[in-house]
Image (cartoon, rainbow, N blue to C red):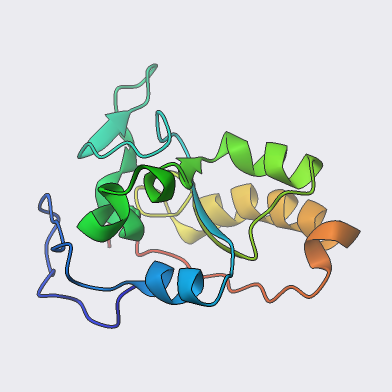
Length: 153
């Protein structure tokens, strides 16, 4: 999100100083709308370390998988912080045809294969993505990049 790892090779509570630019600065400069959708994030702009599944108490949402929340230049700006939303807002924005031009979407720790495996993640991802690929609004002028996180092995 900022062209560097900033020395982050850990799962600590990392913060990138306000004077460091991110892709959001470039997008804003060019008038390109943007947003992040984070599965199981409790509320827009949440800056906590993680948020646990309320049934299993396992960490579903984790800060380390939400790159823009690490940037003080984003989270210290209320308007920008509100653009980092819970995953449920994606469906609302899609239905209302209000998706941003640039979006970063992160499933939770189970669905992204981090705490499971690629087979599990694929079973979650495939029906979700197939629906989007058939959506005329979503597919108009869309470039979709799909990546997977590592598993425990």
